Amino acid sequence: MEEAGKYAQRQSELCLRNDSIDRQLFDEYGVKRGLRDENGKGVLTGLTNISQIISFRKENGEEIPCDGELLYRGYDIKKLALGGIGRRYIFEEGAYLLLFGDLPDEKQLGEFKTVLSECMTLPTNFTRDVIMKAPSEDIMNSMIRSILTLASYDPDANNLEISNVLRQCMQLIGTFPMLAVYGYHAYNHYEKGGSMYIHRPKQELSIAENFLRMLRPDMQYSELEARVLDIALLLHMEHGGGNNSTFTTRVVTSSGSDTYATVAAAMSSLKGKKHGGANLMVMNMMDDIRAHVTDYSDKEQIEAYLLKILNKEAFDRKGLIYGMGHAVYALSDPREVVFKNFVEQLAKEKNRQADMVLYNNIEEIAPKVIARERKIYKGVSPNVDFYSGFVYDMLGIPRELFTPLFAIARIVGWSAHRMEELITTDRIIRPSYKSLVTKRDYVEREKR
Image 1 (cartoon, helix red, strand yellow):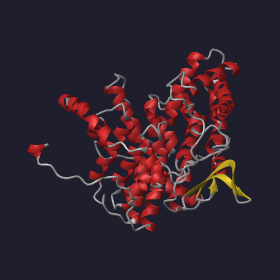
Image 2: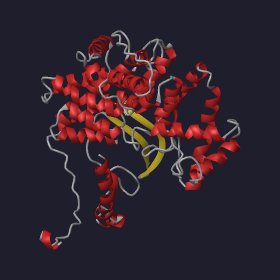
Image 3: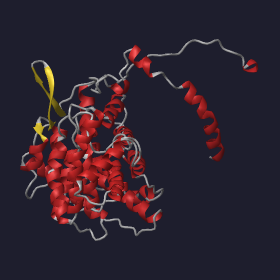
Image 4: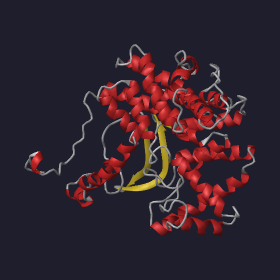
């Protein structure tokens, strides 16, 4: 291992020299870097009935920025979330909608929830033999290993019939909370010296309730805590189909690969810090702001420090105010709009009003600072990641589980897209690359 590291360090210079490509060549050949055009808009690569993002409206032939909308199977996410207010949990209803295309009635939802709860189980000794065997601080890696191992327990792992794929997807939706929480407890026990808690889920509880029950030593949670987490899961379960991990799901599915390998690939994409780890960066930034801003109500002091961050003079010196702006939305992220009301309720219950003041002031000030300094005129607004990390922190969820929580929600969207890809497309996704290779004469080894 040590020699390999030294060798790789020396040889990496060759990689840097031979694998670098002049960025001007991308423009010269009309290549869309990152499958995006010069304005950052994604290149059209497919069709979907699953969800839609609206951030512009057409007026006199021009695209005008508008408040963002997110539609699940045509239904506004805001109305879906409001439908969960009261005594109902909404994640399972949203999962039914994305998987099957229609809102369920009471009977359909009850049957689906029963089946989903029965899926919240793992093979005998799986927790001991797989999850606890090699604990890792990176819970996403732990989950990926578990997902791939689950294929060994499935006699129909490679069967691509829709009924079988649907069965596999529902089983993964049901087991994801267990894989995440048990993976964390194994790491916390073996690597950090904490106590070990392996609580079994209860079939009559929702996914959100079971997550909190399995995570906490005393298995206790308030109704508001579970409902806020439930809403967070609903808001994160799907996002338009063009995001990196969902596209990965489509690509791997198109090759004819099995469900476990496909979901493991999507997980590998989501764990990248440019994708699923955004709320962690917000939390790290907020820690830094708290360390340098003494009065959370002093807007001038907050603006001055945000300006330092933007000018690469503070925090990670990348010049980014994390949680602000989005690649798709212009004026507002509908998920953030829905979420904020629940965030404020939880902050009150947890006596975190001072932090809420800080978040509110940053939400007000940061877009103005960014627009002024970066000369961005389309509008800058907070995205859902600006608040999600704060919520998880108030719920006592360790940061190692922030991205896995994203996966617990997004597995639903991946499942829907996998099935749509299998049903509607019979061609492997195979994009083209322009080769810059020039032919060279072969030189005998003795003469090199």
